[in-house]
Length: 250
Image (cartoon, rainbow, N blue to C red; front, side):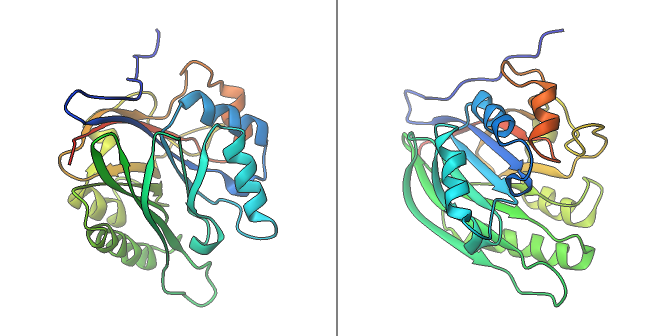
């Protein structure tokens, strides 16, 4: 059976923006970079919320390589956000960006958020890419910090996405889904599970939106034209989540 069509990007006569948002943990680009670029390009995203972007030696060069090979530009994040990265298409007008460092827990990798406020058409909205802790208590605290940071963006609409290291039944996932809209739950499209590519059996990556954003479809783009199973398995150790959204003019 053919995969249902996911709407393309565009701008409505009322100034609303129809956008494609991709969330993707790319494991520091340690795997097949060409496969990774092909997957991202086939999804034709307006914005990509990346987790585990390169953050050590020559990280800017590797982020620039990924942007150049996917027809995108680097918006913010990377090493200053300890891994979360934002990429965008030339449709996007950038108002501001900010990289947020979260409190450090001794012995654990420090986490952060890559954030931005952007415009597409008449729509103005915030973005936040996250990669939450492997430790449950710290993860829950970070989920709360994510909600506080979205509110601090002071925008009419916002999109948050990332690797939650938590399933929908988990406390941190439920905290976010209670305050925001889980796009897969609202309008499932494609596949659900994001880990692992070879044998997906859990959903630990997600896209969330604030009230007012219309979710037209969201899920793992397996079977999307140009996205092959071989590339998904070779690109990294997570599957991407692609969402089509309509953001009202503001």
